[in-house]
Image 1 (tube, helix red, strand yellow):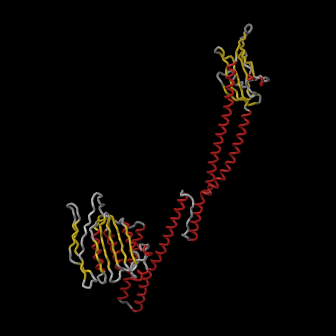
Image 2: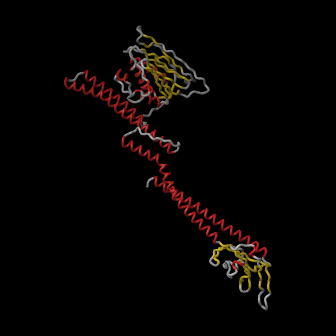
Image 3: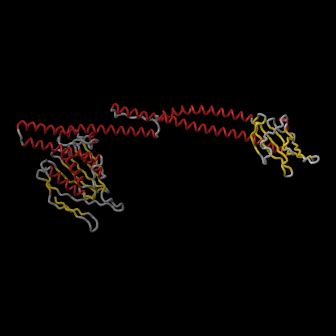
Length: 514
């Protein structure tokens, strides 16, 4: 059974139960009110009669028992034809009818003989000469003894007719109400499930046509269905983005692997044709190395996606890693006309992983070296600003266009100038950088102008967290540099940089030789 049918069935059953229950309660209350109205009339009548009734004792002859005469008032001057009154006295043979109202003068039977002779007052329903009557029976007491009974009855025919008519109206109303509830439940279930049906059709369209651009329109309130529609649209947006990334990923991997494989295949053809030579072996080894680096980077990024890479963080001197990176980039650029400058340097400690931080700095500096032409400059800096450690790498290279800035951290993304400049990168370095920064709870930003250069800025929270009641201090350490005569290279000046970290007797001293 479908959800729509179940909703219709349950809604109709629930509404029918409510209607039947309400009808039964209404019927019972109305019947009780009408019966209670007759009972009150009977009580009032009996009260008036009891106030005016008289009893007389007639002495019997010989051994006969004295008879009690019960004299009723003139009943017909007080009551309508729907009220019947009888007075019964006790004699030796039992209850004897002594008086009655004129409207039942032709009958000598009791209004309700089942309660005559019983002590106490009784209110009963009886059948009197084919009529349904409501009978009030009360004993007549004289000198502390029961000498007879008075029975006052009211005709129930009018009440029965009203009750039967009310019952008919209630049954017809319930039938129409139940039929209306079924129709209403069908409409309600259709309206309630319409967005779900649209989602189902949209999902079927996606499955049948591979159209991930399908979106649902919702003009209703932000209720459960509105949130369901919103979640579906968000899911479709994410799926579309993931499929787009996957397609681009497969295309980029194919592109990156095609070049080294083509080179290796070409060199193998040369070796087969002309024999083994060192140049072909070196070329194949170089291309195999590129593919190895590519596969390793892809493996690491794939493991990061499902949490397979665990990074342990502990207190790390970021300034030490910064100096190591500075020396590495100077060694890399020794054969190029590039100026490498440590523009800002401050001691700072963060909660990090030294190996991953070295990988981060290596990727950023290699990126700067790769895209900065000869004659340019690369500036590095480390600052301690309030509770943040700020690392930045700035170059005067070819820059990045505004359209490319939003995608440079995507895997395999490379702008066309980058591809034409070196042909060595895979477009994975910045993706790895962003993962490392995110793992350390930091943030990486990039600003660039085409033809003017690029600046990467990375911020990390310092370790330990700063004392809010202590003013931060900034201890700048000057960096002494020297250039060659032509100003094209920086050579290290033998200088011991002493970084003193404030504290107690456990203060540490770090020495770096440049």
